[in-house]
Amino acid sequence: MRRTLSRGSCVRQLGRRKIMAFDFSKKLQKDEGTTLVVDALNLAFRWKHNGKTDFVQEYIGTVQSLATSYNCEKIIITADQGSSSYRKKLDPGYKMNRKEKYAEQTEEEAAAFKLFFQEYEKTLAALENMYPVLRYDGVEADDIAAHLVKFQTRYGLDKVWLVSSDRDWDLLINDTVSRFSYVTRKEVTKANWSDHYDVSMEEYISLKCLTGDKGDNVPGIPGVGPKRAQSLIEQFGDAMSVYDAVPLGGSYKYIQSVNLHAEQILKNYELMDLLTYCDDAIGVENINDIEGKLINED
Image (cartoon, rainbow, N blue to C red):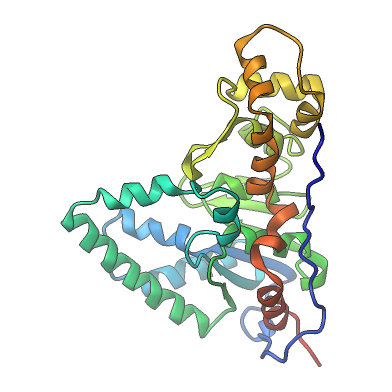
């Protein structure tokens, strides 16, 4: 029953265009190779929730303060430009719940959001004069951050601190990559992973593929919540192995649900496995642009 998936099938053209590369050494004099990667819109919501519409300088100050706290030499800003075209092609319902939510806004709420977004755009414009801002049409910050982590060595990112309250970014954590959430004021690292999750780092993507992501309108297997997903992972090893074992034996309703909806597991890997599919989601031309901005060329 197994179907072969394209694991990061986007083949990049290594010939890079001549784009002015940022000289990070003039920005911060800190630990060489330590980098702050910011989820731009996610962080901006800190001020939206506080009802502030004038936050450009506070935003920049927050980023610089975090860079100082984590002894970062470099700062990279990653930003969404609409929802992911790659994921919309896979699943037209992707993040449709958010669109419906905004459609139900009152006139007052819509006006407040417009003011917030105008200030956010001003913030990005100001940041572009200081740090590389990576933003591409139809590409999400999650995929850009995943690409940077996937190719840490290429970009000279020896140690990375991710700034986001989005738990999807925990898929990127490894020995040298950690996340700070401005919402919880907590860090998620390889060392304290078990304080935050009941599954291992390697099992996290399997948990997500089995249970889905309500925030992004990605369905899981009906009847399979975190506990049952953990049980399946313990029994089969990972979500892909669950798929390979279909049809599963047993009369429990959730087992029959797995058998009936097994193809959703494959789709969820393509939708949520950031490290595997980030390059497909970003595209060759945009990857060349990232390389031009971040890799100092002679």
